[in-house]
Length: 246
Length: 266
Ligand SMILES: Nc1ncnc2c1ncn2[C@@H]1O[C@H](COP(=O)(O)OP(=O)(O)OP(=O)(O)O)[C@@H](O)[C@H]1O
Ligand SMILES: [Mg+2]
Image (cartoon, rainbow over all chains, first blue to last red; front, side, top):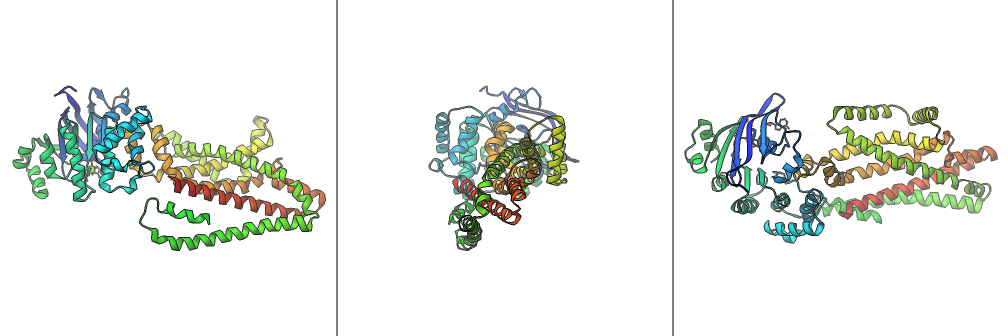
């Protein structure tokens, strides 16, 4: 993977929900291997931005380039883009009618057309990586919430994504489970995965981020390396936000 | 007895409510008894009439099975066709394409506003004008068009009952909407869809008696033919009613068991 080449480029993205401007001229570049953390108050457009990156939301104007494809270009195969951009949701969204192993196998077999044997081999390695291998034959409701979220991460990784998007992956977990999920995310970071992370965990943001982005009212207010962002924020709004959260 | 198998399924998403077992077990056994009384009663009545009263019941009993076969044929074909129409209608009703959505909605509104018997006549004679197809086929098509609308609503509700995040998760893994529907949404929707679908099946079985008015020799029509020739109206319709009762009871039980299987299985 070429270093320093842009994995994600967002130009002047604007998104309305009715009269509400959820994204206000957002422009952003993310390099391969970079870990970008997005913070901001509730309703500031963090999820909308993240979901726009794999077209779960469609922007009204502007452009979003993933790798070398404009994802809103009618000629782009969005399903290929989505394979390459794994997404992890606050609500896990594991498939309740499938076992843990089947959860990870499904898209590999349906989308990547891998054989069951090949998919299972890959899945078992990933389940081991997220430390739920012994749950492979169980249905998700038997898992703790933290284990379900780790399953969701394994499921996304099975598509061999180049970019991982995390939308408040730990917000509905208690501290212990949060720790388990953050540990998996840390492993991915060490491996050089390109990650875009929306989180309220400021400690984790400071530790893992190459760059922190602060959003408010749909716009990017400030972005910086974590050392400067947290110690010496440049904008008044950022300072107010950090005062409230830290 | 088989009702007790219901428990693990009820606890499928909720393993912590084993305490409910005793209470629901009591209720279930009461239902089994009601079904048991009705079913045993009907079978016993038929057996008594045919074996001990013999005349004219034995003759009626011999005359009717052809009609039962036709009733089954109409019901099963209509259900299969209605399932296809229903699935398409259900999917169309949640489609983002306005024209597809509107077409399906109008279909459902129109069908729901016209009595089945009127539809049967209408489609039967309308089809008869355009193409010459057997009475049986027009009856099946008419029933399917009608029931397809109702089943469409069942499919729509079942699909919409699956949390929105499931579709998003499937799509974000790169599945097409068809793949996501097939592998993620519909298998989950089946749980919600199956019980009302079973009811529709039994309802359609009963409504299939309406086709006796079109020249289709189903159970009811065979009964009418026999009664008209022998003037044994009371006796004939007693048998017809008992046979319908036995069949519908069997099928409501069968759909119940199928439902349990699906829920308890996976
Ligand atoms: N589908 C939608 N329809 C209408 N409005 C929406 C929709 N999704 C989001 N919004 C609105 O857009 C704004 C931005 O929402 P978004 O979910 O992106 O915020 P967020 O920064 O992720 O907030 P949180 O921290 O609470 O998750 C909010 O005002 C929200 O109410
Ligand atoms: Mg959000």
